[in-house]
Length: 214
Ligand SMILES: Cc1cc2nc3c(=O)[nH]c(=O)nc-3n(C[C@H](O)[C@H](O)[C@H](O)COP(=O)(O)O)c2cc1C
Image (cartoon, rainbow, N blue to C red; front, side):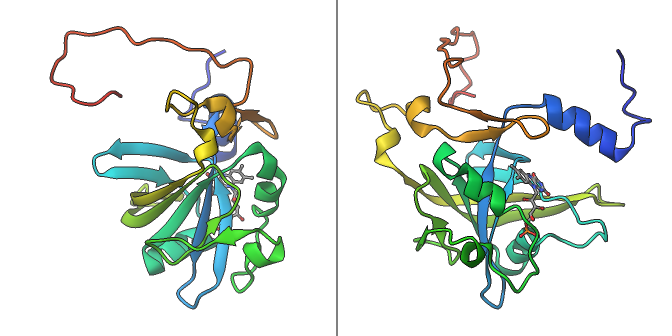
């Protein structure tokens, strides 16, 4: 079957891309409005961009009326956010926080999400997660420029909180101990704690210019 993406509507394109570009990690993003309302929401349009400077990307879609979601507006206003990774133990709570609440209400208070203070930014981080990245806004890019459907937000990682229990005896992060969830298609989710995990060693190439692994 060939899908002609130049004729698909956005809903169909979302379905086919979202159901096949998987698994996608979930960024559970805490942010704060300019007047101090704490916000928390999950985003699976999320990736690492580069390590120099350490940068990640999330992409909140615009709402039907083309306005910004609370997360995007808060980040634009304050320039700060925290990306928490979601352990299987907190997946139900993460799902609850995807509910759209009016901007004056906090998902953290509404769903009793346990939090801890951050070190470098104002938004608090979620307690009980294996990793939280404290980020400063690096770029806020509505895309596409002429008729945006989303905002690509790049954040520079200033600090990370790592739960030492995810580190194995040999000092490496053990995916099974990390046990984060990822978004698959429709209502499906994946876990890093899976018998499907396996190891593969990279071949050594000719290109000595590369200083870091990708
Ligand atoms: C697992 C999961 C992943 C999601 N990923 C995204 C995403 O990448 N982009 C997006 O715009 N919405 C995504 N959503 C929906 C938002 O979480 C939802 O719109 C939320 O209400 C936004 O909150 P806010 O208005 O407080 O920012 C996702 C929802 C779930 C459950």
